[in-house]
Amino acid sequence: MHDLTQCVRHPAVSHDGFASLAVPTYRASTIVFDTAADYAQRQQRGPDGYTYGLHGTPTTRTLEAQLTALHRGERTVLLPSGQSAIAITLLTALLPGEHVLIPDTAYPPVRGFCVNYLEPRGIAHTVYDPMLGAGIAALIRPETKLVWLESPGSTTMEVQDIPAIAAAAHAAGALVGCDNTWATPLLFKPLDHGVDFVMEALTKYVGGHSDLLLGSVTVRDITLHRRLKDTMRMLGIGIGPDEAALALRGIETMGVRLAHVGRVALDFASRAASFGAVERVLHPALPSCPGHEFWKRDFAGASGVFSLVLKPETTPRLDGALSAMTRFGIGASWGGTRSLLVPMPVRTDRVAVPWTETGLILRVSIGLEDTNELWDDLSTLLRALEAR
Ligand SMILES: *Cc1c(COP(=O)(O)O)cnc(C)c1O
Image (cartoon, rainbow, N blue to C red):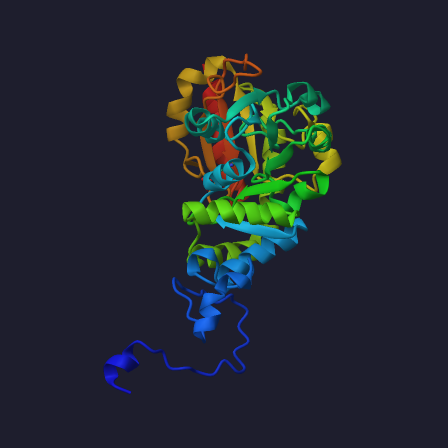
């Protein structure tokens, strides 16, 4: 073989005895076929066959299978971010003239997508009180085809009565989608509670190291999988194998990371409640959190994100106190190894249930640093906010 021909053909080497525990990172755009007939019939390989790198590689399929197993689902699709997983689910479930219900506490860009993208294309939405439970039935119209859930709610942590909402939605012929990013499949399995699409930002706890962006949607109904794949194929959306390999590695340690941050977060949330700067602590495992009884009934535990509602008089001191922190970082995308704090503007986001408290809300994400150093940092901040 000429050198130039050899250069583009990788020599085959033995894999015998190579029993690595790591998932290989398979890269591909094109897939070659043994015969012209194989190529002509490639669509007959079905959704689990390999036809083009965009539609799946053994690395991405391994991550899909892992998430499917953890959620006790049938199939999973992978998207380039959590937000794209939300967008693809809404675009798959809804046609012009139809309607979606969004909780007031959804990750704020969900409403942005409804207002700025779906509405101009003839798809309407209504924002609802996340604590409605079975009362959601009154908001479901004949054209309502999807009820979106996020539990606990972004920042304010309301836990929803998911089985009651799912039953009301299904009785009216609507599908149910749930953002499960806070819990991960280790702490809550929405498909077991009547949800049709479980969406996660793998960017957070699955990645676990603040170094990747990825989203997933897992379903039990195989026809919903086909519809999701159809939407993705039309829009040309897929993911690369490097992110999938990082996510698979993240899942291996997710159980110990979640157990640790869950324990520390609940301890800090309980202790923070006694500080004069704190009006209220929002943590699903504390009885003061709206929907705490649903968390107790449905969830296997709590992760490491919770919020502190600060007294209004602390506002002028907050920026200075936050900037003086030495262990917590100031940042939004939680779920990594570094602990984060961020003030959240909840008042301007709520439309169904006006947020009446005027104090700022501080969202806390616990990481893997030394617990005593973290508490020193957080308690120093809370005392600084109190100081007259
Ligand atoms: C971060 C987050 C998202 C979006 O994920 P990206 O990967 O950043 O797009 C969606 N939902 C929740 C609850 C999140 O925390």
